[in-house]
Amino acid sequence: MENRKQQAIELEKKKHLADALLQWQIVSAASPEDQDARQAIARLESAIRARLDSIREQVKKPSPPEQLRVLHLKTLALQPGNQEAIAALKKLEWTTADQAASDKSASMANWQRKPAISVPRNTPQVAPSPKPSQTSSSTNLAQFNRLLDSAEQSLRDQRWEHAGELLLQASDLSQSDASGRLITMKKQLSQQYYALGMRVFTSNLEQAIDDLQTSLWFDPDNIKARIQLSRASKMKQNLEEIRNPK
Image (cartoon, rainbow, N blue to C red; front, top):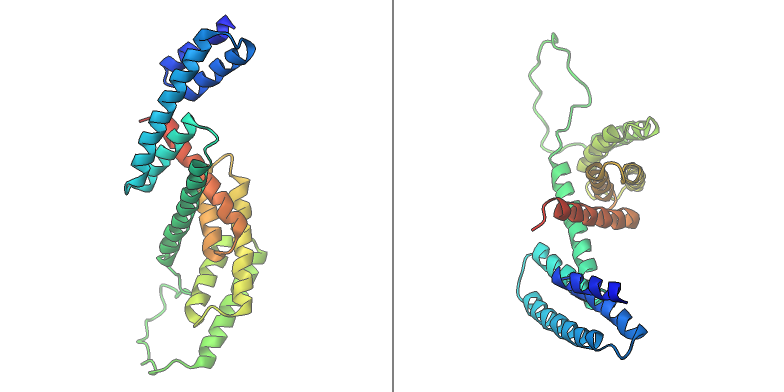
């Protein structure tokens, strides 16, 4: 027990109050008459309560998400089973994942779209003919279907990025994105990007996050991608905190 007591003392010096309390509680369970353990338990429980009260007051104030996250982590460091802090952290993680998906949407909206047919360099340029005031719906539909045909071929060839560009162009032509074929192909591409992200999840976290964001952009209802993106975002934040401790 003496070794455990010394360990508890060292933990308290390092401000690891919850760990120190646990060690003293083990000592007390083994030796209920130990006065050092009783005094230490009372002292640590009082200190933990005071810190938790201080953190609760800070959480009530308007704060950036990252600051709130740190406060909730501090709460769990003091009281690992605090369900309120656990629930709050989960909510922040989902918010982070949603924001990441939104950022990806904004980025993908600015993709440079290439023309379907390239013009040879030496071909004389002809002035475009005046456009009619209203585009023929049949022409739009034909172009829409051609894009989907090409996207379908790209999916078969596993050219995911090219398929994504074609589906974006098809979405621009579709007035409501209500085409069953377009929706199905977007979901297929979402699954492919999800698989790509999971394949590199443990070896290239940045690439995994990018692939999972893309997966969610093509299918916001992809729950698996949303869960894994939340997990990856949390892992990235934890790694950054380890590399750059405050």
